[in-house]
Amino acid sequence: MYNFIHPGGKMSIRVRFAPSPTGHLHVGNARTALFNYLFSSSQKGQFILRIEDTDLLRSSLENEEMIYEDMRWLGLDWDEGPRKGGDYGPYRQTERFDIYKKYSEKLLKDGNAYKCFCSKEELEKEKEKAVKEGKPPRYSGKCRNLTADEIKTLEDKGVEYSIRFKVNKEHILVKDVIRGEIDFKTDSFGDFIIVRPDGTPIYNFVVVVDDALMEISHVIRGDDHLSNTPKQVLIFEALGFEIPQFAHIPMILGPDHAKLSKRHGVTSIKAFRQQGYLSEALFNYLALLSWSDEKEREILNKNELIESFSLKRVSKSAAVFDFEKLKWMNGIYIRNLEENDFFERVKPFLTDSGILSEDYINKHSEKIKKMSLSVRDNLDLLSEIPEYIKVYFHMPDELDNNVKDIMKWETTPVVLKAFKEEIEPLEKIDQPKYKEIVKKIQKEKKIKGKALFMAIRIGVSGRAQGPELDKLVTLMEKDELQKRLEIMIEKIGGN
RNA sequence: GUCCCCAUCGUCUAGCCUGGCCUAGGACACCGGCCUUUCACGCCGGCAACAGGGGUUCAAAUCCCCUUGGGGACGCCA
Image 1 (tube, helix red, strand yellow):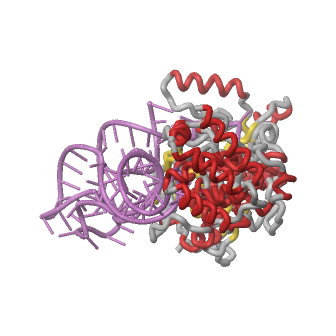
Image 2: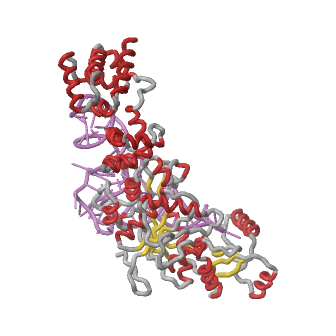
């Protein structure tokens, strides 16, 4: 259905993700990249990465590097592009200027474009005037019909010029896989610039040249590009290129229903990683924004997503980014991690929090792994691990009311003293030993259930909630346990 | 302002193309309950939507029109 036959007759699906390296990869762009990736993978096509760095002021190599890093982390590998090569390179627009020059000259020669000598200031004035008069602020076409002599005179004088595309059609029909046919009237934009006075080409022009030369079959991009599309169609036609299939996917909105941006908080892929999201979870969640599985599954891994993805099931309406749901999904993925994998991923968050040093973790690897595992069910984010695992390392500075209540039970000091006595002679406490002790106290002191267990819990942790008691007791050093018990007994006595 | 797009629970969505199966299904969040020596996990249940108005039709969430609402684009940014 989405097969695309090129002039050469060969049938292939080729899509591209074309970010401009002006900062970190943002979720909105990542979702666009993801849909491209999913589509090409599901169609056994090629996924091309192209760097749109024609804005020399805002683009940088460092930013480019960050984008590669973010994409790799998310699991979006490209088949062709920087760092990868391919037969359609170069894949960085600043390295393609000679190509664009060739095509802008062709447009000029064929009469589809012309040199415009108007200064920025002039145009500014023109625009202001138009707005005042309530007219659409578009170029007057002043330089459209300059004679060859006039052009020569201006050029000889050294007046700088930009190149404008000559818009002759009144209507342009854009075909979109997701939205159907859309009719645009060209009077809303007029002759537009394709090359700046300094010779650098502009987006709407280069994107067409690149998509055509790179034989892109499907242009899958954000909705915000829809209104650029007629301009691009015009250029495709003027250059005699075949027009690709367009698929404009809906925007991602913030909780206030405005286009998702930095002001909504965490939106860069890097920030998600730092906050303790798993790339698999983010990948899964992003896929579900304006796309849904035919079988209505929500938890789908990469392969399942590739298998079931289809542009047909992409909806037309924008989606609000729901951080709560992402968190929930992240929790699911955390709980599904293989144990060693979980520990490896959680380690950086343990050291970053300053609660444990890398050295210490390496020395007591097995023990800390068990501790981590004991609190895993509580986590929605990897970054939450310190606040749960700290129970093993510190008594709380302040006791909460639940703890204070338990301290008042008359059975509590009895249990605590007995427990302390029992562990006194032991070298270490293991699982069976712990159970034995508890049973013994239960029998001898005739205390059971909550009265017994909650007493031990506050005695060894100072908290009314935490990991399972046997884990708490067996994973802590005996010295530490005794110290804590003493402190608690003393506190109760002092009450 | 002009042009374009969109419209089902608070949010993500299924259903819409190919009207009856919809008393509108699922998920997050929220609220109950169960499980449990705690927290959490898990399980069970509940709350909650077809924007409004006209058509078309025996029948409309589904098709058509208008209104309203929301979003995007109007750059020598991409």
